Amino acid sequence: MEKDSLGGSKYLLLIIDEASGCMKGFCLRVKSESEDYIRKYITMVQTQFCKKVKFVRHDGAREFATNSQLFYEDEGIEQQTTVPYAHQTNGTAERAIRTIVTIGRSMLHHAKLDKCFWAEAAMTAILLTVIGFYQYW
Image (tube, rainbow, N blue to C red; front, side, top):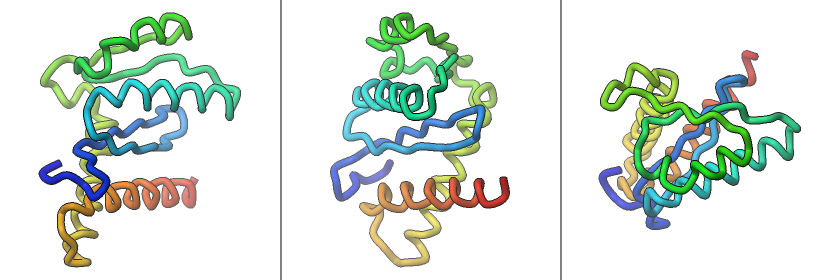
């Protein structure tokens, strides 16, 4: 994001469950934190819902591929990488990110808040999107 959040976050990690459409967001200070959050999320899903994560799809960025390879192999998770610089190959995630960012920016603009509240606005946008999704499900 353009400005650090109040908590010092600079990045937003958005995880989308393709089977249910549910989203989970994490605010990151550095991109390398994404590996830990992805591992924790996978472990939580497999423990809480007794469902096996079958694959993880990402854009091939270094922060997703560095140390996670061994974890994915141990868990039997297929790692799918989309085509570099072709956002349409990961359309679901790209559209969700755009939606969350647009809702977050609209909330900040309407409330006349500084951009340092982007993380709170993004997390609220994710929550509202998930609640709205399940209302019509």
